Image (cartoon, rainbow, N blue to C red; front, side):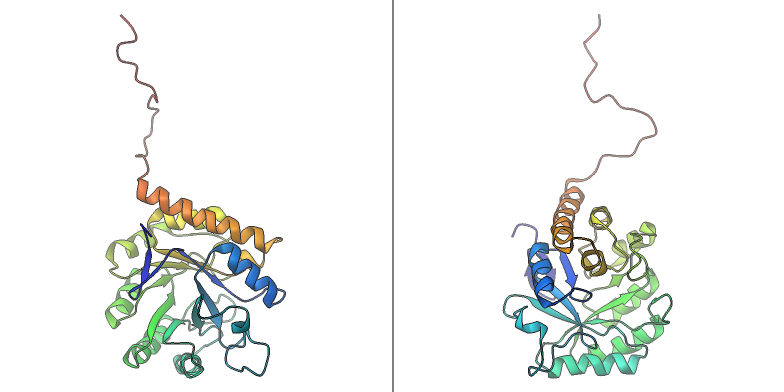
Length: 257
C-alpha cells in the first residue's frame, strides 16, 4: 500500500466506509460491500443484529476476520443511550471501535453536538476508539479531537438526503486544523459527491443510503469505489490553478516570425 488510510494505527487499502442498513437482505448487503471494496463496515447496533448469535446475524456474512466492524449508535437521542449502546457492542465482542451518533431531532437527524461531546468524553475515558458524527462545525471538530477522538466525521448534508457536500469551505477549515483523520459522513448521493470529498483532501468517506437506495446497489457500490479512488488520486496529483481567462494548452512561442 503506497497510500494507505490509517485509522488508530491500522492501515487500510480502501478509503470508502460503507453502512449495512436498508438492503433487501444480508446477501445483497454482502454483495454491495464486496463491490465497494470497503474494509470497514458500520453497523447500527439498535437496528441490525450483531449481538444475538441465535438469530440471523450480520456477522454470519461479514466475517470480522476480514472486515473491521464499526458499531454505530444510530437511533440514540441522548448521551446516556449512546454510551449504553456502545458498551453493548463491546460486550458482544465486536471491539472498542465505535461510530458515535447522538441525534438531535427526528426531522433533520442533525447531531446533538453537546450530547455527542458528553458521550465522547465518557467513551474515550473507557478506552473506546471514538469516531463522532457531527455537523460541519470546525469548533465541534476541534473539541472532539482534544477529547481524544480518533477521527472526526462531519456531515456533507443531512442523513439520507443525497445532497452532496453543501459547505466545502467548512470542511476545508476542519481539514486544515485537524491532526486526526477527517471522514465525510452522511449526505453523499452519487459518485461525484464522493470524488469531491476526496478532492478536498478528506481521508475517507462513509455512506449507506447512496448505495443501498440506488436502483442497482451493486453497480453503485462499484461506482463509489472508483470515485473515491479517483478523487484521492486527483487530490494527490494537485489540480491546476483556477483562472478567469483562458491559457493556451500548447506553446505559441516561436511559431511566428
